[in-house]
Image 1 (cartoon, helix red, strand yellow):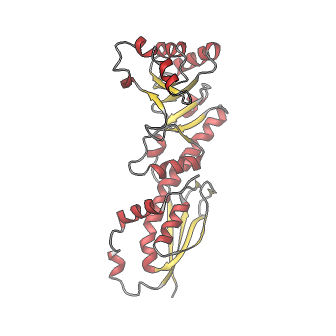
Image 2 (cartoon, one colour):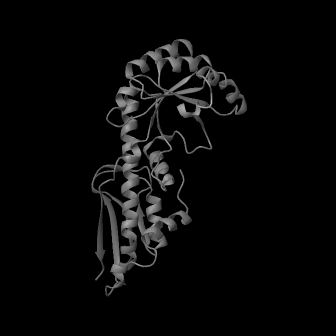
Amino acid sequence: MFNLTKEELYRYINEDLPYLDLTTHIQKEKQKKATLEIYTRENIIVACSEEAASIAKLLGCKVKMFKPSKTKLKKGEVILKIKGTYEQIQQTLKLSQVLLEYSCKIATQTNNMLKIIKQHNSICELLTTRKTIPFSKKMCIKAILCGGALPHRLGLSESILFFDYHRKIYSTNEEFYNQITNFKKQLPEKKVIIESETLKDAKNLMKYNVDVIQLDKMPLDEIKELVDYKNSNYPHIKLLVAGGVNLSNVEKYAKLQIDGVVTSSIYSCGMANIGCELKIKH
């Protein structure tokens, strides 16, 4: 697991607090001592609580307690408790709460999806795409890790994945197939993954010894046929499914005994229902 750096957190803080909190600035007695509890209104998997606590510290608050990332919490339980002046608490409140609302929802949705997959296919992994929320990649990746998934791709630099539009520079599919051996020779430590949309193309890719085939929006009956064909002829090749896979339909794919489910849906699952309780020491 990793944590976001102070520099990254300061950038996040400065988006919301570039100068001062104007509302609390015009209030009197803003130096009164206060405490804040951030709690969950639903069952969640905690993610990015370390960052929420660090934000509080960077804004001058003291952290009394926080539940580490990957902790399972029930409705009503406290994620983070801090103390400071009323002004410091007000500056911290929404920055930490909103971060937790997004990250905990992603982690919880990830975990729910993974549990469904494992019920039907113990060897299948949940993998997430590089289509993270813009400017929020590290938060998204930490959240899916907390939920039990793994990143399918972190970006363009660390993995090989050929899509249909990568084939456009070749005159025919056969010309592209013939290059697979060369791709594997150039980067012998990497897996060559190729996306396919048809049964015929996927079978041809197997004949040319591709490492992994990513099946995009392929009908369930065709995926089943391809899994049986692969197991009988090319058991070393891995099959992933992608394209429109989400919490509502992942069970159907997991039952087909594929090796991995690739999804972006986790990043757009909304926000966890997380509340705050602020108390003033009079």
